[in-house]
Image (tube, rainbow, N blue to C red):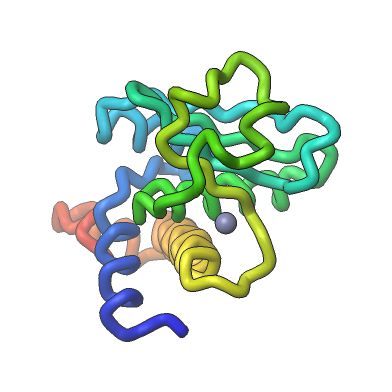
Length: 164
Ligand SMILES: [Zn+2]
């Protein structure tokens, strides 16, 4: 179960994200990498991997593997979910995970964290899912602000970007 404290922490993490305008997941990934000073690589999952998304933390960068054979919307959601793990720095089995052996160009010894998307049974999965949906909500709010009179008003007052 997610606690109120977890919800608060996840909200704060999402509020601190460098949201690109207009919003797109690839640009968010780039902006987040710049903010963290660590590259984030999004790569296609090799065939045969029995998951749809993986986040891997390496010493100097992060890698998100995402299932390619699905809709763009679903891919975007998987990436946001993995960003949720990354922001919360969820621990994982690291290079001991069987998947570490099938991922190309990665030495299992270098893998500090490895999280795969599984059924939403654990707190970590729920947190990642919560962050993904909070980011989508923020992106939607941004869109309606951008198109609305309120957005222009806020821009005029220099308030844009201060929403939560
Ligand atoms: Zn997950």
